[in-house]
Image 1 (cartoon, one colour):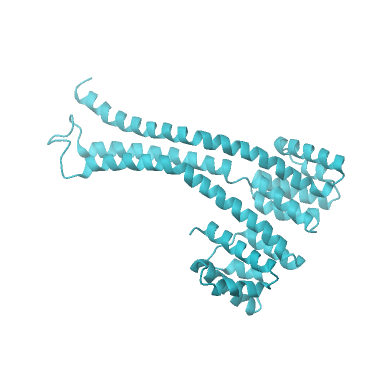
Image 2 (cartoon, one colour):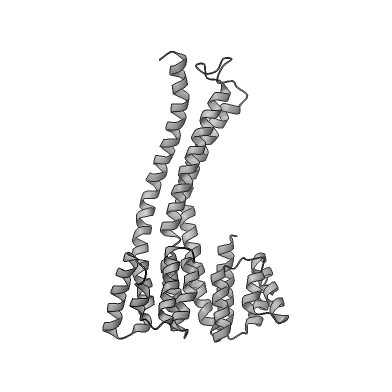
Length: 316
Protein backbone atom coordinates (compact mmCIF):
# COMPACT_ATOMS: atom_id res chain seq x y z
CA UNK A 1 0.00 0.00 0.00
CA UNK A 2 1.36 3.40 -0.98
CA UNK A 3 1.76 6.18 1.57
CA UNK A 4 -0.98 8.24 -0.13
CA UNK A 5 -3.44 5.35 0.02
CA UNK A 6 -2.62 4.64 3.69
CA UNK A 7 -3.01 8.30 4.61
CA UNK A 8 -6.37 8.43 2.82
CA UNK A 9 -7.75 5.33 4.61
CA UNK A 10 -6.39 6.53 7.97
CA UNK A 11 -8.13 9.90 7.56
CA UNK A 12 -11.39 8.33 6.42
CA UNK A 13 -11.42 5.92 9.38
CA UNK A 14 -10.59 8.66 11.89
CA UNK A 15 -13.26 10.98 10.50
CA UNK A 16 -15.90 8.26 10.56
CA UNK A 17 -15.23 7.46 14.23
CA UNK A 18 -15.06 11.10 15.33
CA UNK A 19 -18.36 11.80 13.55
CA UNK A 20 -19.82 9.08 15.81
CA UNK A 21 -18.86 11.32 18.76
CA UNK A 22 -15.81 9.36 19.89
CA UNK A 23 -12.88 11.37 21.17
CA UNK A 24 -9.68 11.60 19.14
CA UNK A 25 -7.87 9.25 21.51
CA UNK A 26 -10.73 6.72 21.50
CA UNK A 27 -10.91 6.80 17.71
CA UNK A 28 -7.19 6.15 17.37
CA UNK A 29 -7.39 3.24 19.82
CA UNK A 30 -10.26 1.68 17.86
CA UNK A 31 -8.24 1.90 14.63
CA UNK A 32 -5.10 0.49 16.28
CA UNK A 33 -7.01 -2.47 17.76
CA UNK A 34 -9.13 -3.19 14.71
CA UNK A 35 -8.56 -6.64 13.22
CA UNK A 36 -9.58 -5.53 9.73
CA UNK A 37 -7.36 -2.45 9.61
CA UNK A 38 -4.20 -2.56 7.50
CA UNK A 39 -1.12 -3.24 9.68
CA UNK A 40 0.56 -0.05 8.52
CA UNK A 41 -2.49 2.05 9.45
CA UNK A 42 -3.02 0.21 12.76
CA UNK A 43 0.62 0.78 13.78
CA UNK A 44 0.37 4.47 12.87
CA UNK A 45 -2.81 4.86 14.93
CA UNK A 46 -1.21 2.98 17.83
CA UNK A 47 1.86 5.23 17.78
CA UNK A 48 -0.16 8.46 17.61
CA UNK A 49 -2.51 7.36 20.41
CA UNK A 50 0.48 6.52 22.63
CA UNK A 51 2.02 9.93 21.94
CA UNK A 52 -1.27 11.67 22.82
CA UNK A 53 -1.48 9.60 26.02
CA UNK A 54 1.97 10.94 26.92
CA UNK A 55 0.62 14.48 26.56
CA UNK A 56 1.88 15.32 23.07
CA UNK A 57 -0.28 17.20 20.57
CA UNK A 58 -1.97 15.36 17.70
CA UNK A 59 -0.17 17.50 15.12
CA UNK A 60 3.23 16.86 16.73
CA UNK A 61 2.52 13.12 16.84
CA UNK A 62 1.68 13.15 13.14
CA UNK A 63 4.97 14.84 12.35
CA UNK A 64 7.02 12.16 14.14
CA UNK A 65 5.00 9.18 12.88
CA UNK A 66 7.15 6.78 10.83
CA UNK A 67 4.54 4.29 9.61
CA UNK A 68 2.68 6.89 7.56
CA UNK A 69 4.41 10.06 6.39
CA UNK A 70 2.12 13.04 6.92
CA UNK A 71 3.11 16.03 4.80
CA UNK A 72 3.54 19.55 6.16
CA UNK A 73 0.10 20.64 4.95
CA UNK A 74 -1.59 17.77 6.80
CA UNK A 75 0.31 18.59 10.00
CA UNK A 76 -0.38 22.34 9.70
CA UNK A 77 -4.12 21.82 9.18
CA UNK A 78 -4.22 19.43 12.14
CA UNK A 79 -2.58 22.10 14.30
CA UNK A 80 -5.23 24.57 13.07
CA UNK A 81 -7.95 22.09 14.09
CA UNK A 82 -6.43 21.83 17.57
CA UNK A 83 -6.49 25.60 17.94
CA UNK A 84 -10.07 26.03 16.72
CA UNK A 85 -11.54 22.79 18.07
CA UNK A 86 -12.95 22.02 14.62
CA UNK A 87 -11.27 18.67 14.08
CA UNK A 88 -14.17 16.98 12.29
CA UNK A 89 -14.48 19.67 9.61
CA UNK A 90 -10.70 19.79 9.13
CA UNK A 91 -10.50 16.01 8.76
CA UNK A 92 -13.26 16.26 6.15
CA UNK A 93 -11.13 18.69 4.14
CA UNK A 94 -8.00 16.52 4.55
CA UNK A 95 -9.99 13.45 3.51
CA UNK A 96 -10.98 15.11 0.24
CA UNK A 97 -7.40 16.28 -0.32
CA UNK A 98 -6.02 12.75 0.23
CA UNK A 99 -8.70 11.39 -2.10
CA UNK A 100 -7.69 13.82 -4.86
CA UNK A 101 -4.01 12.95 -4.43
CA UNK A 102 -4.74 9.22 -4.58
CA UNK A 103 -6.96 9.56 -7.66
CA UNK A 104 -4.34 11.66 -9.44
CA UNK A 105 -1.61 9.13 -8.63
CA UNK A 106 -3.75 6.23 -9.89
CA UNK A 107 -4.57 8.21 -13.05
CA UNK A 108 -0.87 8.65 -13.79
CA UNK A 109 -0.07 4.98 -13.11
CA UNK A 110 -2.91 3.81 -15.39
CA UNK A 111 -1.72 6.14 -18.14
CA UNK A 112 1.80 4.71 -17.93
CA UNK A 113 0.86 0.99 -17.91
CA UNK A 114 0.70 0.54 -21.69
CA UNK A 115 3.88 2.41 -22.69
CA UNK A 116 5.89 0.80 -19.87
CA UNK A 117 4.68 -2.66 -20.98
CA UNK A 118 5.63 -2.02 -24.62
CA UNK A 119 9.02 -0.63 -23.64
CA UNK A 120 9.70 -3.62 -21.32
CA UNK A 121 8.90 -6.06 -24.14
CA UNK A 122 11.28 -4.24 -26.49
CA UNK A 123 14.08 -4.27 -23.93
CA UNK A 124 13.41 -7.97 -23.22
CA UNK A 125 13.67 -8.87 -26.92
CA UNK A 126 16.91 -6.92 -27.33
CA UNK A 127 18.47 -8.46 -24.21
CA UNK A 128 17.42 -11.94 -25.36
CA UNK A 129 19.38 -11.57 -28.59
CA UNK A 130 22.30 -10.03 -26.73
CA UNK A 131 22.74 -12.53 -23.92
CA UNK A 132 21.12 -15.78 -25.03
CA UNK A 133 23.33 -18.82 -25.53
CA UNK A 134 22.95 -18.67 -29.32
CA UNK A 135 25.40 -16.37 -31.07
CA UNK A 136 23.03 -14.52 -33.35
CA UNK A 137 25.82 -12.21 -34.36
CA UNK A 138 28.00 -14.99 -35.70
CA UNK A 139 31.71 -15.43 -35.17
CA UNK A 140 32.57 -12.03 -36.62
CA UNK A 141 29.44 -10.24 -35.60
CA UNK A 142 26.31 -9.33 -37.49
CA UNK A 143 27.43 -7.66 -40.74
CA UNK A 144 30.70 -6.83 -39.03
CA UNK A 145 29.11 -5.34 -35.89
CA UNK A 146 30.37 -6.93 -32.70
CA UNK A 147 28.06 -7.78 -29.82
CA UNK A 148 29.78 -5.11 -27.65
CA UNK A 149 29.20 -2.39 -30.26
CA UNK A 150 25.59 -3.43 -30.66
CA UNK A 151 25.12 -3.38 -26.89
CA UNK A 152 26.57 0.13 -26.71
CA UNK A 153 24.17 1.27 -29.42
CA UNK A 154 21.20 -0.15 -27.54
CA UNK A 155 22.51 1.44 -24.34
CA UNK A 156 22.65 4.93 -25.85
CA UNK A 157 19.16 4.52 -27.28
CA UNK A 158 17.94 3.33 -23.89
CA UNK A 159 19.41 6.38 -22.10
CA UNK A 160 17.84 8.74 -24.64
CA UNK A 161 14.48 7.04 -24.23
CA UNK A 162 14.65 7.27 -20.42
CA UNK A 163 15.42 10.99 -20.56
CA UNK A 164 12.46 11.63 -22.83
CA UNK A 165 10.28 9.28 -20.78
CA UNK A 166 10.92 11.07 -17.48
CA UNK A 167 10.44 14.47 -19.14
CA UNK A 168 7.00 13.41 -20.40
CA UNK A 169 6.06 11.84 -17.04
CA UNK A 170 7.10 15.03 -15.23
CA UNK A 171 4.97 17.14 -17.57
CA UNK A 172 1.96 14.84 -17.12
CA UNK A 173 2.33 14.90 -13.33
CA UNK A 174 2.50 18.69 -13.27
CA UNK A 175 -0.47 18.91 -15.63
CA UNK A 176 -2.92 16.48 -14.05
CA UNK A 177 -1.68 15.86 -10.52
CA UNK A 178 0.17 18.83 -9.08
CA UNK A 179 -2.37 21.64 -9.37
CA UNK A 180 -0.95 23.53 -6.42
CA UNK A 181 -2.65 26.83 -7.23
CA UNK A 182 -6.08 25.19 -7.04
CA UNK A 183 -5.17 23.40 -3.81
CA UNK A 184 -3.85 26.64 -2.29
CA UNK A 185 -7.02 28.64 -3.00
CA UNK A 186 -9.20 25.73 -1.88
CA UNK A 187 -7.25 25.53 1.41
CA UNK A 188 -7.42 29.29 1.94
CA UNK A 189 -11.17 29.27 1.27
CA UNK A 190 -11.68 26.42 3.72
CA UNK A 191 -9.65 28.19 6.42
CA UNK A 192 -11.57 31.45 6.00
CA UNK A 193 -14.92 29.62 6.12
CA UNK A 194 -13.69 27.92 9.32
CA UNK A 195 -13.12 31.25 11.03
CA UNK A 196 -9.45 32.02 10.36
CA UNK A 197 -8.52 35.55 9.32
CA UNK A 198 -8.03 35.98 5.59
CA UNK A 199 -4.38 37.14 5.85
CA UNK A 200 -3.48 34.14 8.06
CA UNK A 201 -5.37 31.81 5.68
CA UNK A 202 -3.47 33.18 2.68
CA UNK A 203 -0.19 32.76 4.59
CA UNK A 204 -0.91 29.12 5.42
CA UNK A 205 -1.97 28.45 1.82
CA UNK A 206 1.41 29.71 0.58
CA UNK A 207 2.93 26.44 1.88
CA UNK A 208 0.67 24.49 -0.47
CA UNK A 209 1.39 26.78 -3.40
CA UNK A 210 5.12 26.27 -2.83
CA UNK A 211 7.10 28.89 -0.91
CA UNK A 212 9.84 29.15 -3.55
CA UNK A 213 7.48 29.05 -6.54
CA UNK A 214 5.98 32.00 -8.38
CA UNK A 215 2.53 31.25 -6.98
CA UNK A 216 3.90 30.83 -3.45
CA UNK A 217 5.58 34.23 -3.60
CA UNK A 218 2.31 35.72 -4.88
CA UNK A 219 0.51 34.36 -1.81
CA UNK A 220 3.18 35.68 0.56
CA UNK A 221 3.03 39.12 -1.02
CA UNK A 222 -0.76 39.03 -0.83
CA UNK A 223 -0.64 38.21 2.88
CA UNK A 224 1.75 41.08 3.43
CA UNK A 225 -0.58 43.44 1.54
CA UNK A 226 -3.63 42.28 3.50
CA UNK A 227 -1.79 42.91 6.76
CA UNK A 228 -1.14 46.48 5.58
CA UNK A 229 -4.86 47.02 5.01
CA UNK A 230 -5.18 46.33 1.27
CA UNK A 231 -8.27 44.59 -0.07
CA UNK A 232 -8.00 41.18 -1.72
CA UNK A 233 -7.73 42.55 -5.27
CA UNK A 234 -4.95 45.01 -4.41
CA UNK A 235 -3.07 42.44 -2.34
CA UNK A 236 -2.95 39.82 -5.09
CA UNK A 237 -2.32 42.22 -7.96
CA UNK A 238 0.93 43.51 -6.42
CA UNK A 239 2.81 40.84 -8.36
CA UNK A 240 2.37 40.33 -12.09
CA UNK A 241 0.44 37.12 -12.67
CA UNK A 242 -1.93 37.72 -15.59
CA UNK A 243 -3.49 34.26 -15.46
CA UNK A 244 -4.30 34.59 -11.77
CA UNK A 245 -5.58 38.16 -12.19
CA UNK A 246 -8.19 37.05 -14.73
CA UNK A 247 -9.44 34.30 -12.40
CA UNK A 248 -9.64 36.70 -9.48
CA UNK A 249 -11.42 39.40 -11.48
CA UNK A 250 -14.21 36.97 -12.39
CA UNK A 251 -14.51 35.64 -8.83
CA UNK A 252 -14.48 39.13 -7.27
CA UNK A 253 -17.13 40.32 -9.71
CA UNK A 254 -19.35 37.36 -8.81
CA UNK A 255 -18.76 37.99 -5.10
CA UNK A 256 -19.70 41.67 -5.43
CA UNK A 257 -22.93 40.76 -7.21
CA UNK A 258 -23.94 38.08 -4.68
CA UNK A 259 -22.65 39.99 -1.67
CA UNK A 260 -20.82 36.94 -0.31
CA UNK A 261 -17.17 37.96 -0.28
CA UNK A 262 -16.21 35.17 2.13
CA UNK A 263 -16.54 32.67 -0.75
CA UNK A 264 -14.25 34.53 -3.17
CA UNK A 265 -11.33 32.17 -2.58
CA UNK A 266 -13.50 29.09 -3.04
CA UNK A 267 -14.93 30.52 -6.27
CA UNK A 268 -11.39 31.08 -7.57
CA UNK A 269 -10.59 27.47 -6.66
CA UNK A 270 -13.69 26.24 -8.55
CA UNK A 271 -12.62 28.21 -11.62
CA UNK A 272 -9.11 26.76 -11.47
CA UNK A 273 -10.55 23.27 -11.02
CA UNK A 274 -12.56 23.53 -14.25
CA UNK A 275 -9.45 24.65 -16.10
CA UNK A 276 -7.45 21.82 -14.56
CA UNK A 277 -10.05 19.22 -15.59
CA UNK A 278 -9.92 20.40 -19.22
CA UNK A 279 -6.12 20.22 -19.17
CA UNK A 280 -6.18 16.78 -17.55
CA UNK A 281 -8.56 15.35 -20.16
CA UNK A 282 -6.35 16.71 -22.94
CA UNK A 283 -3.22 15.18 -21.38
CA UNK A 284 -4.88 11.80 -20.94
CA UNK A 285 -6.00 11.91 -24.57
CA UNK A 286 -2.47 12.63 -25.76
CA UNK A 287 -0.49 10.43 -23.37
CA UNK A 288 -0.80 7.20 -25.40
CA UNK A 289 0.18 8.80 -28.75
CA UNK A 290 3.06 10.56 -26.96
CA UNK A 291 4.49 7.30 -25.67
CA UNK A 292 3.97 5.59 -29.04
CA UNK A 293 6.14 8.34 -30.53
CA UNK A 294 8.71 7.80 -27.76
CA UNK A 295 8.79 4.08 -28.48
CA UNK A 296 9.30 4.91 -32.16
CA UNK A 297 12.19 7.19 -31.24
CA UNK A 298 13.74 4.36 -29.22
CA UNK A 299 13.45 1.91 -32.15
CA UNK A 300 14.75 4.54 -34.56
CA UNK A 301 17.75 5.15 -32.30
CA UNK A 302 18.58 1.43 -32.21
CA UNK A 303 18.11 1.12 -35.99
CA UNK A 304 20.34 4.10 -36.76
CA UNK A 305 23.08 2.97 -34.37
CA UNK A 306 23.08 -0.53 -35.83
CA UNK A 307 22.56 0.29 -39.52
CA UNK A 308 25.08 3.12 -39.88
CA UNK A 309 28.05 0.90 -38.93
CA UNK A 310 26.81 -1.66 -41.46
CA UNK A 311 26.95 0.93 -44.25
CA UNK A 312 30.34 2.03 -42.98
CA UNK A 313 31.69 -1.54 -43.05
CA UNK A 314 30.50 -1.96 -46.63
CA UNK A 315 32.08 1.35 -47.60
CA UNK A 316 28.74 3.07 -48.27
